Image 1 (cartoon, rainbow, N blue to C red):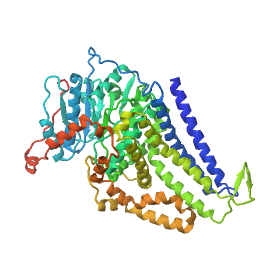
Image 2: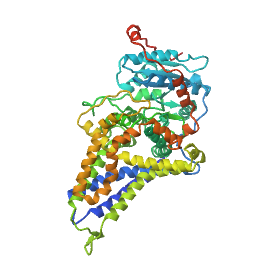
Image 3: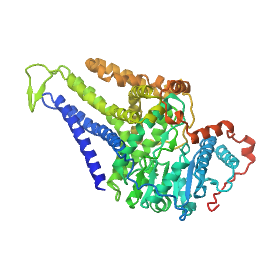
Image 4: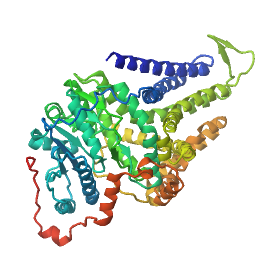
Length: 610
């Protein structure tokens, strides 16, 4: 614990020193013959956002130190113990589904079951499809597909199916209902998403880690992104593979037993979860009141409040999920997460939670609040530049202004901008260095030259996409704060080409705002126009960017030329390949209209005792 306290203190110190130095430099530049309210506002906004950027940068640096030191430190968890055959712990692997692609769900859970079978410990695992589907054709198809799954023979783990007729409490309510009815039969529970994949080896390792750490209530296996072919998705998968491990190592080092839960690809101690993770209903009306939408952060906080440990295991590499195929689908998912994360603001000061849990709530909310803060910073900067037009430039020695000659501040602003961009892009460069240190990892990402080129392309693409996300997330935050709610439906799980009309309908406001901002800046502060060009360019290109990056043809072109490659493509990933094989051979057809009219809905109730 002393080592953890030292790491946290060092991280906080570095973040505060970095933010203070940047803010002080900006203050020195801005103080021209006294200060104005606009300048004070600008400095305050910059202080908050520079702290946010510095926190992320030094977290990645901490992850690099953990991975590069000898011996390498991936986690502070006790090492996994051998499977205790005398104890015979039982694990339920649950996949909650809600109006999902039936073929993909069945192929995914069957692939995981086959991978577990290869580990020769099937008798410990049982699989559950927990359907909350509300569309009749969907749950009919689920039942038919479940009946066609190969039946368990010998020690092969069974797969049970249950359809819940009333969708109360969404995903968290689905899992809670399972725990009430069948949780007492199991020691541990692994929660999956509809697009999750985990190898049997990783499931066994998670079980061994739980056995070796009796105070662990939850262990999170960081998932890698795989399985999609659009250019947008390939860029996301590449970023997850190159930058994700080092960020996960930093989080694991900084959080220790005060970790967080991401809602899936994690193992939970069932009794602890049942005893302490009943979700409260927030007072007031939606969107900030009512049912808690983003349940995972809250469940982790409730476990920590009860004294259970929550860990991340960054050394586990057999955990995967799929990414939305287009920018638009990605942002639709973000809209749901935005409302859920903003609800957490009300829990930051709730009684009983640990400081680490409060920080998790704050960081989750800040992931979306940062966007309107960035937008406000830009607007205030333009307003300040407009007011400073015609003012003589000065510089300071200590507290005293020197007015002997005009000193341009372009170089000072540029230095501050370069330093800020260095922290943002430095995180990606550290991830690149981390991969370059491992010969096998370099080969898995297409070789050093293609890997480096892919990182540079990702930097350019993320620069163009950043203002699009900033403006969209700002709209989400304003909508939530003004009382707007969103549906919590199924997600787009398969590749698709985004039609130009759909992209235009969603991103035309971004293009219009770019044009209006261009005219305002050019008219009021033409000398500052070049500072804003990267932002304006990204907004102006939002429609073609969204359309082109949704192309699977461009995605495959990049793959054929060794760009945005990930290890699962270079070396293969058996659980993912098996899913593709099953989808290709035997897709699940939907029921006919006559079947829907005449078939009786059958609910296959789980029989946990086999």
